[in-house]
Image 1 (cartoon, rainbow, N blue to C red):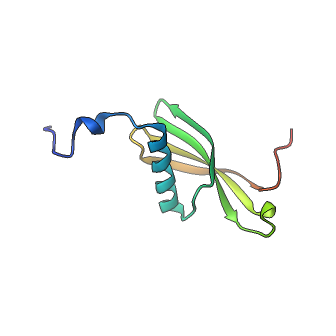
Image 2 (cartoon, one colour; image 1 turned 180 degrees about the horizontal axis):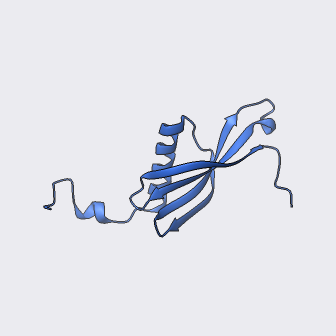
Length: 98
């Protein structure tokens, strides 16, 4: 298959971590209508990337009572979102019990 004008050496470069994070944020927001507030896990895997994003699902007053969801988001090596799932939900003001 011949290279097209859109196929260049630039597209063959691996994505940087900030590029992957931006791609994940944009695609997740487009699919869910929710914008991640933070990322608590971010790693490269054999198949691409996996991250865990914290998202406000229910806004309450005071803010410490808002419900946060932790989503696991997977992307392929090119930065395309391949899946997401909610891992857990918790109130913002609560910490993990140990």
